[in-house]
Image (cartoon, rainbow, N blue to C red):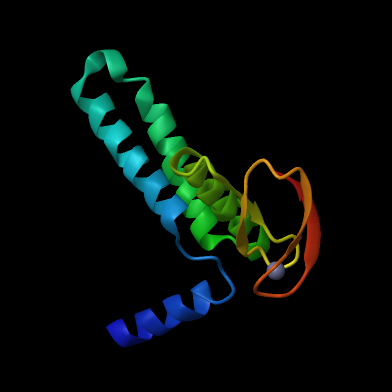
Length: 124
Ligand SMILES: [Zn+2]
């Protein structure tokens, strides 16, 4: 019975995005906000944000628009790396979404994607 259920779930998830680091962050933040809002009366309004985050997380998981979800994940990765690494810049390849690292402060340069070979120009 569980095997059939698992099989059905697998079919249901086929072609859907699934989960990633951004979803994990959304879920964790949502849970923390929901716990805070239930214990601290002054923060009760946070429950709205916690639901919003968790609904967003579920929406991303079951989304069939995989390209859009990958762009969000790439944006999140760039956002994180911007704070971690100020010497380099990170761009997502416009054709395959691969994150490409280039040195900062070189002006306008042509970048070749290491994965698909696509060239694109960016200002560093
Ligand atoms: Zn590429």
